[in-house]
Amino acid sequence: MMADSVVSSPQHQPLETEVRTVIADDERLARQKLLILLESEPQVKVVAECQDGRQAVSAIRSFRPDMLLLDIQMPDLDGFQVLSELSPEEMPVVIFTSAYDQYAIRAFEANALDYLLKPFDQERLHHAVERARAELRKERDHEITHRILSLLSQVRSVTPPAATELDSRLVIKANGRVVFLDLDNIEWVEAAANYVRLNVGKESYLFRETISRISERLDANHFVRIHRSTIVNIRKIKELIPVNSGEYVVVLKSGRELSCSRGYRAALQGIVEKSS
Image 1 (cartoon, rainbow, N blue to C red):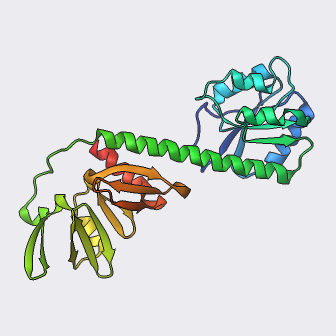
Image 2: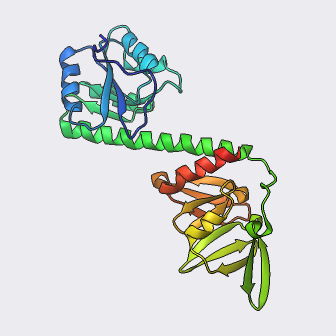
């Protein structure tokens, strides 16, 4: 049966807020035990509990959960048949719960994340839930990366807004020369104590300014800060490569690789959206 307390809209919620979960088990006591154990798991919200396979398929399609705790032997459809009914887009992270160990190999062949053999305790369930959280974070980071790359592909070369010569150029003394440097030609900027290093092709210039002050001067539509010590010209970006913990490697058209820390990822996404 569907839980009476289900009131959430059938949409995925931000992972930081909650892990939306469906429980599917034909034994009422087994469902009750799972509900009790999950109360100790922070930010896990049970949106539906089901007593047979058909109810499980319906609940998954209605509530689009992040995680599914799925028994194997159930009426109407068994656990494997439930998964066969779902499309890849509908598939949540699956943790099988069963009293029979002979299905374990088949469960992992069905791409289950974990297999809990009844009776299991709080510690074992917690380990499985933490694995599910890690998998969901990975999937979410992949989705964000795909969105940013899609936006980058839509960025068109546009004429910069009208600006004065003073706004669009920097006057720099370098090796006895006075260089008039167009801001648009800067590929990336890195902090260097009380200076910043402006990288333009094979050349680089030291400029007496802080990274925060130079960030304010650069065109906010085309430059973005990707690290506390790095600013990059978005028009010079070739690709983004996701790495651990939500960080990225920003690859420039020149081949230079720069690190984008997780704290500045939102700023990168915002500048791409504005430029599209």
